[in-house]
Image 1 (spheres, rainbow, N blue to C red):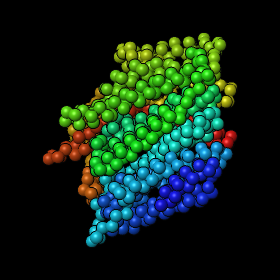
Image 2: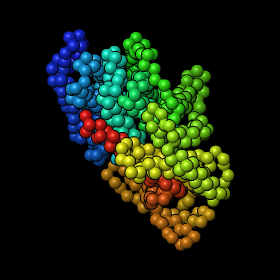
Image 3: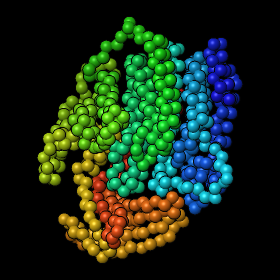
Image 4: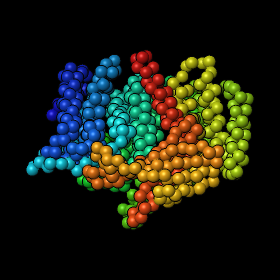
Amino acid sequence: MASVIIFFLSLKSYKLKIIDKRIFSISFLQLFFVLISFISLIICFVISDFSNETVFNNSHTNKPIFYKISGTWGNHEGSLLLWLLVLTLFLFLFLINSKNELKRYRVLTVTFQQIIIIGFFIFVLVTSNPFNFLFPIPTEGLGLNPILQDPALAIHPPILYVGYVGSSLIFSATLAAVIENYISKDWAKNIKIWVLISWVFLTIGIMVGSVWAYYELGWGGFWFWDPVENVSLMPWFCLTALLHCVLVLEKREFLKSWTIILSIATFTLSMCGTFLVRSGILNSVHTFANDPSRGIFILCFLFFLITISLIIFFIFNKENKKNYIKIHFFSKEASIIVNNWFLMYFLSVVLIGTLYPIFLEVLTDHKISVGPPFYNKLIIPFLIFFLLFMSVGPNFKWIKEKVITNKFQLILFFFISLTISYLIYIKIGKTNLINTILIAASLYLFIVTIKDLFSKELHNFSKKISHFGFSLLILSILFNGIFSSEAIFNLKVGEKFILKNEKIILKSLVKKQKENYQSIIGHFTIEDDKKNISQFKPELRIYDQPLVATSEADIKTTLFKDEFLVMNKIKGNEYFNVRYQVKPFMIWIWISTIVLAIGGMLSLFNRLYEK
Protein backbone atom coordinates (compact mmCIF):
# COMPACT_ATOMS: atom_id res chain seq x y z
CA MET A 1 0.00 0.00 0.00
CA ALA A 2 2.81 2.41 0.91
CA SER A 3 4.44 1.78 -2.48
CA VAL A 4 1.23 2.59 -4.35
CA ILE A 5 0.76 5.79 -2.29
CA ILE A 6 4.34 6.90 -2.98
CA PHE A 7 3.90 6.13 -6.68
CA PHE A 8 0.81 8.34 -7.03
CA LEU A 9 2.22 11.09 -4.79
CA SER A 10 5.37 11.21 -6.95
CA LEU A 11 3.27 11.45 -10.13
CA LYS A 12 1.25 14.26 -8.57
CA SER A 13 4.43 16.04 -7.46
CA TYR A 14 5.87 15.73 -10.95
CA LYS A 15 2.83 17.40 -12.50
CA LEU A 16 2.84 20.19 -9.90
CA LYS A 17 6.64 20.59 -10.12
CA ILE A 18 6.97 20.25 -6.35
CA ILE A 19 8.07 17.55 -3.92
CA ASP A 20 5.33 16.37 -1.60
CA LYS A 21 6.86 16.10 1.86
CA ARG A 22 4.74 13.02 2.52
CA ILE A 23 6.89 11.07 0.02
CA PHE A 24 9.85 11.18 2.39
CA SER A 25 7.76 10.14 5.42
CA ILE A 26 5.99 7.28 3.64
CA SER A 27 9.29 6.08 2.16
CA PHE A 28 10.65 5.85 5.69
CA LEU A 29 7.55 3.89 6.75
CA GLN A 30 7.97 1.61 3.75
CA LEU A 31 11.58 0.90 4.73
CA PHE A 32 10.57 0.44 8.38
CA PHE A 33 7.82 -2.10 7.61
CA VAL A 34 10.05 -4.15 5.29
CA LEU A 35 12.78 -4.09 7.96
CA ILE A 36 10.27 -5.32 10.59
CA SER A 37 9.22 -8.13 8.24
CA PHE A 38 12.83 -9.14 7.68
CA ILE A 39 13.63 -9.08 11.41
CA SER A 40 10.50 -11.16 12.06
CA LEU A 41 11.71 -13.78 9.58
CA ILE A 42 15.12 -13.85 11.32
CA ILE A 43 13.38 -14.43 14.66
CA CYS A 44 11.35 -17.27 13.14
CA PHE A 45 14.60 -18.93 12.05
CA VAL A 46 16.34 -18.35 15.39
CA ILE A 47 13.51 -19.87 17.46
CA SER A 48 12.94 -22.66 14.87
CA ASP A 49 9.32 -21.75 14.25
CA PHE A 50 8.37 -24.61 11.90
CA SER A 51 4.85 -23.27 11.46
CA ASN A 52 6.58 -21.01 8.92
CA GLU A 53 7.03 -22.91 5.66
CA THR A 54 10.26 -21.09 4.78
CA VAL A 55 11.81 -22.02 8.14
CA PHE A 56 10.61 -25.62 7.80
CA ASN A 57 12.20 -25.98 4.34
CA ASN A 58 15.53 -24.36 5.23
CA SER A 59 16.34 -24.98 8.90
CA HIS A 60 16.28 -27.47 11.75
CA THR A 61 16.73 -27.28 15.52
CA ASN A 62 20.35 -28.55 15.58
CA LYS A 63 21.62 -25.99 13.12
CA PRO A 64 24.13 -23.50 14.70
CA ILE A 65 22.66 -20.09 15.47
CA PHE A 66 24.89 -18.33 12.91
CA TYR A 67 23.49 -20.47 10.10
CA LYS A 68 19.96 -20.07 11.40
CA ILE A 69 20.36 -16.32 10.96
CA SER A 70 22.10 -16.55 7.59
CA GLY A 71 19.52 -19.14 6.53
CA THR A 72 17.04 -16.24 6.49
CA TRP A 73 18.42 -15.10 3.14
CA GLY A 74 19.94 -18.45 2.11
CA ASN A 75 16.73 -19.42 0.32
CA HIS A 76 14.50 -18.07 -2.43
CA GLU A 77 11.77 -16.44 -0.31
CA GLY A 78 14.08 -14.91 2.28
CA SER A 79 16.51 -13.65 -0.33
CA LEU A 80 13.70 -11.79 -2.10
CA LEU A 81 12.65 -10.17 1.17
CA LEU A 82 16.27 -9.05 1.61
CA TRP A 83 16.18 -7.77 -1.99
CA LEU A 84 13.10 -5.67 -1.13
CA LEU A 85 14.80 -4.36 2.01
CA VAL A 86 17.81 -3.15 0.01
CA LEU A 87 15.52 -1.65 -2.68
CA THR A 88 13.59 0.43 -0.14
CA LEU A 89 16.80 1.39 1.70
CA PHE A 90 18.42 2.67 -1.50
CA LEU A 91 15.35 4.71 -2.38
CA PHE A 92 15.32 6.29 1.07
CA LEU A 93 19.05 7.08 0.85
CA PHE A 94 18.52 8.60 -2.60
CA LEU A 95 15.86 10.95 -1.22
CA ILE A 96 18.27 12.07 1.50
CA ASN A 97 21.30 12.39 -0.78
CA SER A 98 19.64 14.21 -3.71
CA LYS A 99 18.13 17.23 -1.92
CA ASN A 100 20.04 19.63 -4.16
CA GLU A 101 19.00 17.95 -7.41
CA LEU A 102 16.18 19.05 -9.73
CA LYS A 103 12.79 18.43 -8.13
CA ARG A 104 11.17 16.85 -11.17
CA TYR A 105 14.19 14.60 -11.64
CA ARG A 106 13.98 13.47 -8.01
CA VAL A 107 10.29 12.62 -8.03
CA LEU A 108 10.54 10.92 -11.42
CA THR A 109 13.37 8.74 -10.09
CA VAL A 110 11.15 7.85 -7.14
CA THR A 111 8.34 6.97 -9.58
CA PHE A 112 10.45 4.54 -11.60
CA GLN A 113 12.00 3.04 -8.49
CA GLN A 114 8.53 2.47 -7.03
CA ILE A 115 7.50 0.61 -10.19
CA ILE A 116 10.39 -1.81 -9.54
CA ILE A 117 9.53 -2.06 -5.83
CA ILE A 118 5.84 -2.71 -6.55
CA GLY A 119 6.83 -5.40 -9.07
CA PHE A 120 8.96 -7.19 -6.48
CA PHE A 121 6.27 -6.81 -3.81
CA ILE A 122 3.79 -8.53 -6.13
CA PHE A 123 6.39 -11.20 -6.91
CA VAL A 124 6.93 -11.90 -3.20
CA LEU A 125 3.23 -11.93 -2.30
CA VAL A 126 2.02 -14.00 -5.26
CA THR A 127 4.80 -16.56 -5.80
CA SER A 128 7.34 -16.31 -2.95
CA ASN A 129 5.67 -15.42 0.34
CA PRO A 130 8.21 -16.03 3.15
CA PHE A 131 5.42 -16.16 5.76
CA ASN A 132 3.28 -19.05 4.54
CA PHE A 133 1.72 -20.95 7.48
CA LEU A 134 1.94 -24.74 7.91
CA PHE A 135 -0.65 -26.81 9.78
CA PRO A 136 -0.27 -29.21 11.42
CA ILE A 137 3.00 -27.75 12.66
CA PRO A 138 5.99 -30.05 11.96
CA THR A 139 8.23 -30.98 14.87
CA GLU A 140 11.42 -30.69 12.83
CA GLY A 141 12.62 -28.87 9.73
CA LEU A 142 14.21 -30.21 6.55
CA GLY A 143 17.46 -28.31 7.10
CA LEU A 144 19.72 -26.19 4.91
CA ASN A 145 22.01 -27.58 2.21
CA PRO A 146 25.30 -28.23 4.11
CA ILE A 147 27.34 -26.77 1.25
CA LEU A 148 25.60 -23.44 1.94
CA GLN A 149 26.43 -23.59 5.66
CA ASP A 150 29.57 -21.54 5.39
CA PRO A 151 30.61 -18.10 6.71
CA ALA A 152 31.66 -16.81 3.28
CA LEU A 153 28.41 -17.84 1.63
CA ALA A 154 26.45 -16.42 4.57
CA ILE A 155 27.69 -12.89 3.76
CA HIS A 156 27.92 -13.39 -0.01
CA PRO A 157 24.22 -12.79 -0.94
CA PRO A 158 23.71 -9.54 1.05
CA ILE A 159 26.86 -7.98 -0.40
CA LEU A 160 25.99 -9.10 -3.92
CA TYR A 161 22.42 -7.79 -3.58
CA VAL A 162 23.65 -4.29 -2.77
CA GLY A 163 25.50 -4.36 -6.09
CA TYR A 164 22.47 -5.68 -7.98
CA VAL A 165 19.94 -3.37 -6.34
CA GLY A 166 22.21 -0.37 -6.82
CA SER A 167 21.81 -0.93 -10.55
CA SER A 168 18.04 -0.48 -10.15
CA LEU A 169 18.52 3.01 -8.76
CA ILE A 170 20.96 3.84 -11.59
CA PHE A 171 18.30 2.59 -14.02
CA SER A 172 15.54 4.72 -12.46
CA ALA A 173 17.70 7.83 -12.19
CA THR A 174 18.85 7.47 -15.80
CA LEU A 175 15.29 7.21 -17.17
CA ALA A 176 14.28 10.24 -15.09
CA ALA A 177 17.29 12.22 -16.35
CA VAL A 178 16.53 11.30 -19.97
CA ILE A 179 12.94 12.55 -19.70
CA GLU A 180 14.09 15.76 -18.02
CA ASN A 181 17.01 16.23 -20.45
CA TYR A 182 19.28 16.24 -17.41
CA ILE A 183 22.11 14.00 -18.72
CA SER A 184 24.89 16.44 -17.89
CA LYS A 185 28.00 17.00 -15.80
CA ASP A 186 25.91 17.64 -12.69
CA TRP A 187 23.94 14.44 -13.22
CA ALA A 188 27.17 12.50 -13.79
CA LYS A 189 28.56 13.71 -10.46
CA ASN A 190 25.39 12.59 -8.69
CA ILE A 191 24.99 9.22 -10.39
CA LYS A 192 28.68 8.35 -10.01
CA ILE A 193 28.14 7.85 -6.27
CA TRP A 194 25.54 5.13 -6.93
CA VAL A 195 27.64 3.56 -9.68
CA LEU A 196 30.61 3.35 -7.30
CA ILE A 197 28.48 1.85 -4.50
CA SER A 198 27.13 -0.83 -6.83
CA TRP A 199 30.53 -1.53 -8.38
CA VAL A 200 32.35 -1.85 -5.03
CA PHE A 201 29.76 -4.17 -3.49
CA LEU A 202 29.44 -6.27 -6.64
CA THR A 203 33.25 -6.64 -6.77
CA ILE A 204 33.45 -7.74 -3.13
CA GLY A 205 30.40 -9.98 -3.50
CA ILE A 206 31.91 -11.82 -6.48
CA MET A 207 35.21 -12.21 -4.60
CA VAL A 208 33.53 -13.67 -1.48
CA GLY A 209 31.59 -16.12 -3.65
CA SER A 210 34.83 -17.10 -5.40
CA VAL A 211 36.60 -17.67 -2.06
CA TRP A 212 33.71 -19.90 -0.95
CA ALA A 213 33.81 -21.94 -4.16
CA TYR A 214 37.58 -22.35 -3.81
CA TYR A 215 37.68 -24.00 -0.41
CA GLU A 216 34.15 -25.35 0.01
CA LEU A 217 33.42 -27.17 -3.26
CA GLY A 218 36.71 -29.04 -3.16
CA TRP A 219 37.61 -28.28 -6.79
CA GLY A 220 40.70 -26.29 -5.91
CA GLY A 221 40.03 -23.34 -8.20
CA PHE A 222 38.77 -19.79 -7.80
CA TRP A 223 36.62 -19.58 -10.97
CA PHE A 224 34.87 -22.33 -12.91
CA TRP A 225 32.79 -20.38 -15.46
CA ASP A 226 29.76 -21.72 -13.65
CA PRO A 227 26.56 -20.13 -15.09
CA VAL A 228 25.68 -18.54 -11.74
CA GLU A 229 29.19 -17.11 -11.49
CA ASN A 230 28.78 -15.72 -14.99
CA VAL A 231 25.48 -13.96 -14.26
CA SER A 232 27.23 -11.91 -11.56
CA LEU A 233 30.24 -11.19 -13.78
CA MET A 234 28.19 -9.79 -16.69
CA PRO A 235 26.71 -6.78 -14.81
CA TRP A 236 30.20 -6.20 -13.37
CA PHE A 237 31.56 -5.73 -16.91
CA CYS A 238 28.72 -3.30 -17.63
CA LEU A 239 29.20 -1.37 -14.39
CA THR A 240 32.93 -1.06 -15.02
CA ALA A 241 32.27 0.35 -18.50
CA LEU A 242 29.58 2.66 -17.09
CA LEU A 243 31.93 3.95 -14.38
CA HIS A 244 34.48 4.97 -16.99
CA CYS A 245 31.82 6.55 -19.22
CA VAL A 246 30.52 8.63 -16.32
CA LEU A 247 34.08 9.96 -15.91
CA VAL A 248 34.01 11.17 -19.52
CA LEU A 249 30.52 12.64 -19.13
CA GLU A 250 31.62 14.44 -15.98
CA LYS A 251 34.59 16.03 -17.77
CA ARG A 252 33.32 16.75 -21.28
CA GLU A 253 29.56 15.97 -21.51
CA PHE A 254 30.35 13.31 -24.06
CA LEU A 255 29.08 9.70 -24.56
CA LYS A 256 25.61 10.61 -23.27
CA SER A 257 23.67 8.00 -25.27
CA TRP A 258 26.21 5.28 -24.53
CA THR A 259 26.01 6.08 -20.80
CA ILE A 260 22.22 5.71 -20.94
CA ILE A 261 22.49 2.38 -22.77
CA LEU A 262 25.01 1.04 -20.25
CA SER A 263 22.77 2.11 -17.33
CA ILE A 264 19.82 0.23 -18.82
CA ALA A 265 21.99 -2.77 -19.75
CA THR A 266 23.48 -3.07 -16.25
CA PHE A 267 20.06 -3.31 -14.64
CA THR A 268 18.81 -5.64 -17.39
CA LEU A 269 21.71 -8.03 -16.80
CA SER A 270 21.11 -7.93 -13.04
CA MET A 271 17.45 -8.83 -13.60
CA CYS A 272 18.41 -11.52 -16.14
CA GLY A 273 20.67 -13.04 -13.51
CA THR A 274 17.76 -13.04 -11.08
CA PHE A 275 15.55 -14.74 -13.68
CA LEU A 276 18.13 -17.42 -14.58
CA VAL A 277 18.98 -18.25 -10.96
CA ARG A 278 15.35 -18.49 -9.81
CA SER A 279 13.67 -20.11 -12.79
CA GLY A 280 15.36 -23.50 -12.54
CA ILE A 281 16.91 -23.05 -16.00
CA LEU A 282 20.49 -23.08 -14.70
CA ASN A 283 21.93 -26.08 -12.92
CA SER A 284 24.33 -25.00 -10.20
CA VAL A 285 25.12 -25.71 -6.57
CA HIS A 286 23.95 -22.23 -5.60
CA THR A 287 20.75 -21.68 -7.56
CA PHE A 288 17.84 -20.84 -5.28
CA ALA A 289 14.67 -22.10 -6.92
CA ASN A 290 13.32 -24.62 -9.36
CA ASP A 291 9.90 -23.15 -10.07
CA PRO A 292 9.25 -22.07 -13.70
CA SER A 293 6.28 -19.88 -12.66
CA ARG A 294 8.62 -17.64 -10.70
CA GLY A 295 10.94 -17.36 -13.68
CA ILE A 296 8.05 -16.49 -15.99
CA PHE A 297 6.94 -13.68 -13.64
CA ILE A 298 10.44 -12.16 -13.56
CA LEU A 299 10.79 -12.56 -17.32
CA CYS A 300 7.48 -10.74 -17.97
CA PHE A 301 8.37 -8.01 -15.49
CA LEU A 302 11.81 -7.62 -17.06
CA PHE A 303 10.25 -7.40 -20.54
CA PHE A 304 7.91 -4.68 -19.24
CA LEU A 305 10.78 -2.63 -17.76
CA ILE A 306 12.98 -3.00 -20.86
CA THR A 307 10.10 -1.93 -23.09
CA ILE A 308 9.47 1.18 -21.00
CA SER A 309 13.18 2.07 -20.96
CA LEU A 310 13.56 1.68 -24.73
CA ILE A 311 10.45 3.78 -25.43
CA ILE A 312 11.77 6.52 -23.16
CA PHE A 313 15.24 6.32 -24.73
CA PHE A 314 14.03 6.67 -28.32
CA ILE A 315 11.41 9.34 -27.60
CA PHE A 316 13.19 11.59 -25.11
CA ASN A 317 16.90 11.12 -25.81
CA LYS A 318 17.82 13.81 -28.30
CA GLU A 319 21.50 14.25 -29.06
CA ASN A 320 22.42 17.78 -30.10
CA LYS A 321 24.44 17.32 -33.30
CA LYS A 322 25.67 20.91 -33.03
CA ASN A 323 27.62 19.92 -29.95
CA TYR A 324 29.53 17.22 -31.82
CA ILE A 325 32.84 16.62 -30.11
CA LYS A 326 35.89 15.52 -32.05
CA ILE A 327 37.98 12.90 -30.31
CA HIS A 328 41.71 12.68 -30.74
CA PHE A 329 43.09 9.14 -30.75
CA PHE A 330 45.78 9.99 -28.18
CA SER A 331 43.43 11.21 -25.44
CA LYS A 332 42.00 9.85 -22.23
CA GLU A 333 38.44 9.73 -23.59
CA ALA A 334 39.62 7.72 -26.62
CA SER A 335 41.32 5.23 -24.32
CA ILE A 336 38.09 4.91 -22.31
CA ILE A 337 36.11 4.23 -25.49
CA VAL A 338 38.59 1.48 -26.42
CA ASN A 339 38.31 0.17 -22.86
CA ASN A 340 34.52 -0.01 -23.33
CA TRP A 341 34.86 -1.89 -26.62
CA PHE A 342 36.94 -4.58 -24.97
CA LEU A 343 34.64 -4.84 -21.95
CA MET A 344 31.62 -5.23 -24.21
CA TYR A 345 33.41 -7.95 -26.16
CA PHE A 346 34.25 -9.85 -22.96
CA LEU A 347 30.65 -9.40 -21.85
CA SER A 348 29.39 -10.79 -25.18
CA VAL A 349 31.61 -13.88 -24.87
CA VAL A 350 30.38 -14.62 -21.35
CA LEU A 351 26.75 -13.94 -22.35
CA ILE A 352 26.94 -16.32 -25.32
CA GLY A 353 28.76 -18.98 -23.31
CA THR A 354 26.08 -18.81 -20.62
CA LEU A 355 22.92 -18.60 -22.74
CA TYR A 356 23.85 -20.66 -25.82
CA PRO A 357 23.61 -24.05 -24.02
CA ILE A 358 20.15 -23.03 -22.71
CA PHE A 359 18.79 -22.12 -26.15
CA LEU A 360 20.39 -25.20 -27.73
CA GLU A 361 18.70 -27.47 -25.19
CA VAL A 362 15.33 -25.79 -25.78
CA LEU A 363 15.61 -26.07 -29.59
CA THR A 364 17.24 -29.48 -29.99
CA ASP A 365 16.90 -31.17 -26.58
CA HIS A 366 20.69 -31.68 -26.55
CA LYS A 367 22.70 -30.67 -23.51
CA ILE A 368 26.19 -29.23 -23.85
CA SER A 369 28.54 -27.66 -21.32
CA VAL A 370 30.64 -24.61 -22.08
CA GLY A 371 33.81 -24.58 -20.01
CA PRO A 372 37.19 -22.85 -19.69
CA PRO A 373 38.53 -23.81 -23.17
CA PHE A 374 35.73 -21.81 -24.84
CA TYR A 375 36.37 -18.69 -22.76
CA ASN A 376 40.16 -18.97 -22.94
CA LYS A 377 40.25 -19.21 -26.73
CA LEU A 378 37.92 -16.26 -27.23
CA ILE A 379 39.12 -13.97 -24.44
CA ILE A 380 42.91 -14.43 -24.18
CA PRO A 381 43.93 -12.99 -27.60
CA PHE A 382 41.86 -9.84 -27.01
CA LEU A 383 42.95 -9.64 -23.38
CA ILE A 384 46.52 -9.00 -24.61
CA PHE A 385 45.49 -5.85 -26.51
CA PHE A 386 43.20 -4.78 -23.66
CA LEU A 387 46.10 -4.91 -21.19
CA LEU A 388 48.38 -2.97 -23.54
CA PHE A 389 45.77 -0.22 -24.04
CA MET A 390 45.11 -0.12 -20.30
CA SER A 391 48.84 0.33 -19.67
CA VAL A 392 49.15 3.39 -21.92
CA GLY A 393 45.67 4.99 -21.99
CA PRO A 394 45.45 6.34 -18.39
CA ASN A 395 48.66 8.32 -19.01
CA PHE A 396 47.01 10.36 -21.74
CA LYS A 397 45.51 13.79 -21.07
CA TRP A 398 41.94 14.88 -21.69
CA ILE A 399 41.10 16.23 -25.17
CA LYS A 400 44.53 15.64 -26.75
CA GLU A 401 47.94 14.36 -25.82
CA LYS A 402 50.36 16.51 -27.82
CA VAL A 403 53.45 14.62 -26.69
CA ILE A 404 53.26 11.13 -25.24
CA THR A 405 54.93 11.65 -21.90
CA ASN A 406 57.51 9.13 -20.71
CA LYS A 407 57.56 7.62 -24.20
CA PHE A 408 61.03 6.13 -23.79
CA GLN A 409 60.16 4.87 -20.31
CA LEU A 410 56.99 3.12 -21.54
CA ILE A 411 58.87 1.43 -24.38
CA LEU A 412 61.63 0.35 -21.99
CA PHE A 413 59.05 -1.12 -19.58
CA PHE A 414 57.50 -3.13 -22.41
CA PHE A 415 60.81 -4.72 -23.47
CA ILE A 416 61.64 -5.48 -19.83
CA SER A 417 58.25 -7.19 -19.48
CA LEU A 418 58.76 -9.16 -22.69
CA THR A 419 62.21 -10.31 -21.55
CA ILE A 420 60.95 -11.42 -18.12
CA SER A 421 58.05 -13.29 -19.71
CA TYR A 422 60.38 -15.11 -22.11
CA LEU A 423 62.73 -16.09 -19.26
CA ILE A 424 59.76 -17.44 -17.28
CA TYR A 425 58.79 -19.76 -20.10
CA ILE A 426 62.37 -20.85 -20.68
CA LYS A 427 62.62 -21.65 -16.96
CA ILE A 428 59.56 -23.91 -16.95
CA GLY A 429 60.61 -25.56 -20.20
CA LYS A 430 57.70 -24.39 -22.31
CA THR A 431 57.44 -22.22 -25.40
CA ASN A 432 54.09 -20.68 -26.22
CA LEU A 433 53.96 -17.44 -28.19
CA ILE A 434 50.48 -16.30 -27.08
CA ASN A 435 51.10 -17.07 -23.41
CA THR A 436 54.52 -15.37 -23.55
CA ILE A 437 52.96 -12.19 -24.96
CA LEU A 438 50.06 -12.43 -22.48
CA ILE A 439 52.43 -12.60 -19.51
CA ALA A 440 54.47 -9.75 -21.02
CA ALA A 441 51.34 -7.59 -21.40
CA SER A 442 50.23 -8.29 -17.82
CA LEU A 443 53.74 -7.59 -16.48
CA TYR A 444 53.80 -4.38 -18.52
CA LEU A 445 50.52 -3.22 -16.97
CA PHE A 446 51.79 -4.21 -13.52
CA ILE A 447 55.03 -2.23 -13.88
CA VAL A 448 53.27 0.84 -15.30
CA THR A 449 50.62 0.86 -12.53
CA ILE A 450 53.34 0.55 -9.85
CA LYS A 451 55.17 3.48 -11.43
CA ASP A 452 51.93 5.52 -11.45
CA LEU A 453 51.10 4.50 -7.89
CA PHE A 454 54.37 5.82 -6.52
CA SER A 455 54.55 8.93 -8.67
CA LYS A 456 54.66 12.31 -6.95
CA GLU A 457 51.30 13.36 -8.42
CA LEU A 458 48.63 12.61 -5.79
CA HIS A 459 45.54 13.34 -7.90
CA ASN A 460 43.42 10.36 -8.98
CA PHE A 461 45.07 8.26 -6.27
CA SER A 462 41.95 6.07 -5.95
CA LYS A 463 42.06 5.34 -9.70
CA LYS A 464 45.74 4.40 -9.46
CA ILE A 465 45.01 1.98 -6.60
CA SER A 466 42.19 0.30 -8.55
CA HIS A 467 44.29 -0.04 -11.69
CA PHE A 468 47.16 -1.46 -9.64
CA GLY A 469 44.75 -3.93 -8.01
CA PHE A 470 43.47 -5.01 -11.42
CA SER A 471 46.99 -5.49 -12.80
CA LEU A 472 47.94 -7.56 -9.74
CA LEU A 473 44.75 -9.62 -10.17
CA ILE A 474 45.48 -10.44 -13.82
CA LEU A 475 49.12 -11.27 -13.07
CA SER A 476 48.17 -13.49 -10.11
CA ILE A 477 45.58 -15.37 -12.19
CA LEU A 478 48.05 -15.98 -15.02
CA PHE A 479 50.86 -17.18 -12.74
CA ASN A 480 48.36 -19.33 -10.86
CA GLY A 481 47.30 -20.99 -14.10
CA ILE A 482 50.83 -21.50 -15.44
CA PHE A 483 52.51 -22.91 -12.33
CA SER A 484 49.65 -24.92 -10.81
CA SER A 485 50.13 -28.66 -10.42
CA GLU A 486 47.73 -31.46 -9.50
CA ALA A 487 47.87 -35.13 -8.54
CA ILE A 488 44.81 -37.39 -8.11
CA PHE A 489 45.26 -40.86 -6.58
CA ASN A 490 43.69 -43.43 -4.22
CA LEU A 491 45.03 -44.26 -0.75
CA LYS A 492 44.04 -46.29 2.26
CA VAL A 493 45.33 -45.89 5.82
CA GLY A 494 49.05 -46.65 6.02
CA GLU A 495 49.74 -46.33 2.28
CA LYS A 496 51.87 -43.71 0.55
CA PHE A 497 51.92 -42.07 -2.85
CA ILE A 498 55.18 -40.89 -4.45
CA LEU A 499 55.21 -37.69 -6.47
CA LYS A 500 58.24 -36.29 -8.29
CA ASN A 501 59.68 -34.55 -5.23
CA GLU A 502 57.18 -35.44 -2.49
CA LYS A 503 55.83 -38.43 -0.58
CA ILE A 504 52.20 -38.35 0.62
CA ILE A 505 51.15 -40.73 3.43
CA LEU A 506 47.68 -41.32 4.90
CA LYS A 507 48.62 -41.91 8.55
CA SER A 508 45.23 -42.39 10.20
CA LEU A 509 41.53 -41.53 10.37
CA VAL A 510 39.81 -39.88 13.34
CA LYS A 511 36.02 -39.74 13.83
CA LYS A 512 34.35 -36.94 15.80
CA GLN A 513 30.72 -36.07 16.53
CA LYS A 514 29.91 -32.37 16.07
CA GLU A 515 26.73 -30.39 16.76
CA ASN A 516 24.95 -31.23 13.52
CA TYR A 517 27.29 -33.57 11.65
CA GLN A 518 29.74 -36.45 12.03
CA SER A 519 33.33 -35.71 11.05
CA ILE A 520 35.91 -38.10 9.59
CA ILE A 521 39.35 -36.44 9.63
CA GLY A 522 42.21 -37.83 7.58
CA HIS A 523 45.71 -37.29 8.96
CA PHE A 524 48.16 -36.89 6.07
CA THR A 525 51.86 -36.11 6.05
CA ILE A 526 53.67 -34.73 3.00
CA GLU A 527 57.46 -35.02 2.98
CA ASP A 528 59.58 -33.34 0.30
CA ASP A 529 63.06 -34.29 -0.91
CA LYS A 530 64.58 -31.93 1.69
CA LYS A 531 62.87 -33.88 4.51
CA ASN A 532 60.46 -31.00 5.25
CA ILE A 533 57.21 -32.47 6.60
CA SER A 534 53.76 -30.87 6.39
CA GLN A 535 50.63 -32.08 8.20
CA PHE A 536 47.25 -32.02 6.44
CA LYS A 537 43.85 -32.81 7.94
CA PRO A 538 41.14 -32.85 5.26
CA GLU A 539 37.69 -33.77 6.47
CA LEU A 540 34.55 -35.62 5.43
CA ARG A 541 31.34 -34.37 7.02
CA ILE A 542 28.13 -36.37 7.20
CA TYR A 543 25.29 -34.03 8.12
CA ASP A 544 22.23 -35.21 10.07
CA GLN A 545 19.57 -32.99 8.52
CA PRO A 546 19.48 -33.26 5.58
CA LEU A 547 21.57 -36.45 5.26
CA VAL A 548 24.37 -35.16 3.03
CA ALA A 549 28.11 -35.87 2.89
CA THR A 550 30.55 -33.07 2.05
CA SER A 551 34.33 -32.80 1.66
CA GLU A 552 36.29 -30.10 3.48
CA ALA A 553 39.72 -29.37 2.04
CA ASP A 554 42.76 -28.59 4.16
CA ILE A 555 44.66 -25.65 2.69
CA LYS A 556 48.11 -24.44 3.72
CA THR A 557 48.51 -20.83 2.59
CA THR A 558 51.70 -18.82 2.22
CA LEU A 559 52.49 -15.64 0.28
CA PHE A 560 53.78 -17.72 -2.63
CA LYS A 561 51.48 -20.71 -2.86
CA ASP A 562 48.53 -22.70 -1.52
CA GLU A 563 48.82 -26.44 -0.89
CA PHE A 564 45.35 -27.90 -1.28
CA LEU A 565 44.42 -31.43 -0.19
CA VAL A 566 40.93 -32.95 -0.23
CA MET A 567 39.68 -36.53 0.10
CA ASN A 568 36.51 -38.41 -0.83
CA LYS A 569 35.36 -41.88 0.22
CA ILE A 570 35.21 -44.52 -2.50
CA LYS A 571 32.07 -46.57 -1.97
CA GLY A 572 32.45 -50.28 -1.38
CA ASN A 573 36.06 -50.36 -0.18
CA GLU A 574 38.48 -48.81 2.31
CA TYR A 575 40.20 -46.52 -0.19
CA PHE A 576 39.91 -42.73 -0.37
CA ASN A 577 40.24 -40.67 -3.52
CA VAL A 578 42.75 -37.87 -2.80
CA ARG A 579 43.37 -34.69 -4.77
CA TYR A 580 46.56 -32.77 -4.00
CA GLN A 581 47.14 -29.41 -5.68
CA VAL A 582 49.77 -26.71 -5.50
CA LYS A 583 48.24 -23.33 -6.42
CA PRO A 584 50.86 -20.53 -6.69
CA PHE A 585 50.01 -16.91 -5.77
CA MET A 586 46.47 -17.86 -4.71
CA ILE A 587 46.30 -15.40 -1.84
CA TRP A 588 47.28 -12.55 -4.20
CA ILE A 589 44.10 -13.11 -6.20
CA TRP A 590 42.04 -12.29 -3.09
CA ILE A 591 44.35 -9.45 -2.01
CA SER A 592 44.29 -7.84 -5.47
CA THR A 593 40.48 -7.94 -5.57
CA ILE A 594 40.35 -6.22 -2.18
CA VAL A 595 42.82 -3.58 -3.42
CA LEU A 596 40.61 -3.08 -6.50
CA ALA A 597 37.56 -2.51 -4.28
CA ILE A 598 39.51 -0.22 -1.92
CA GLY A 599 40.27 2.05 -4.87
CA GLY A 600 36.54 2.28 -5.57
CA MET A 601 35.80 3.00 -1.90
CA LEU A 602 38.36 5.81 -1.78
CA SER A 603 36.82 7.34 -4.89
CA LEU A 604 33.37 7.03 -3.30
CA PHE A 605 34.48 8.72 -0.07
CA ASN A 606 36.09 11.52 -2.08
CA ARG A 607 32.81 12.03 -3.96
CA LEU A 608 30.76 12.11 -0.77
CA TYR A 609 33.23 14.53 0.82
CA GLU A 610 33.11 16.85 -2.20
CA LYS A 611 29.32 16.66 -2.23
